[in-house]
Length: 261
Image (cartoon, rainbow, N blue to C red; front, side):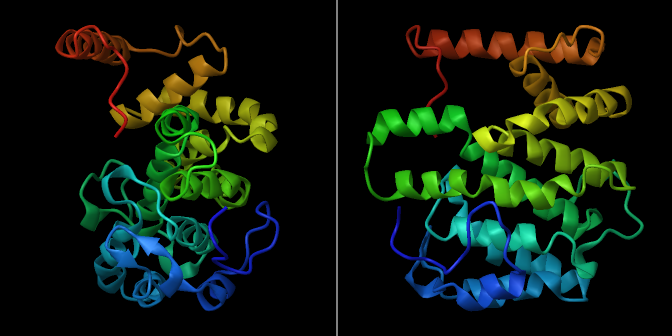
C-alpha cells in the first residue's frame, strides 16, 4: 500500500465528506501534475450552491487525478470524497433531461457519477491484469494506487447503489454504469443479480449507445443471454466493434489485445 494518505476506516465504510477533506494529507499525495495540495479547495467547491462554480471546479478537482486514464495516489481519497457528496443537496439535478450530452446541461451529480464510473473502468479487472503484467507484484507507484482504488470499491459502491432507483432516468442509468465495474470486487458479487435487473430495464428504455454497450457487456460477462434485449442498433454496434478489433489486430501484426493505456 502507498504511504499513509488519510485516516480512514475499513474501506467498506464511506466516511463523511468533510472528514475526508479535513483528515487527508493532500499535499503528500501524487497527482498527474505534482501533489494534491490544491485539491481541497477545488473539491470543496463541488458542493457550492452556484452551479457555475461547481461546473468550473470539476476539472480542477478531478482532472489531476485521472489524467490519461491513470490512477494516482490522490485518486482514492478524491473518489471517496466524490462518493460521499453524491447525496449532497447542491449536486442533485434540477430540470435535467437524460438525453442532454453537453456538460453545461448535465447536473453535477451525473458528472460525478460519470467520473466515478470512468475511473472504476480504468481500475477494473482487465486493466488490473494489464497493470500486473507491466509492473509485477509488489511494484511501487501507480500499481499500488490502482490496488488502493480497487480496495475502496465497496465504499464507493455503497453511495452509487443508493442512486440506482433515482427518479431521473439519466441519474439511475449513469449510476448503473458506474456500479458495474465497482461490482467486480469479490465482496460485491452478491449485487450482480440486482444490477442485471437494472440493466434489463435500461435496455428497455435507453437509446444511449455508451450505456447500452456497458450493460450488455456486463450481462454477457455475468452469463446472461442478451439476445432478447438487443436491438438493431446494438447488433450494428457489435459488428462495428468487431471490425475495429480485426483492423487493430492487423495493424499490430496479429496482436489483438488493446494497448495498455
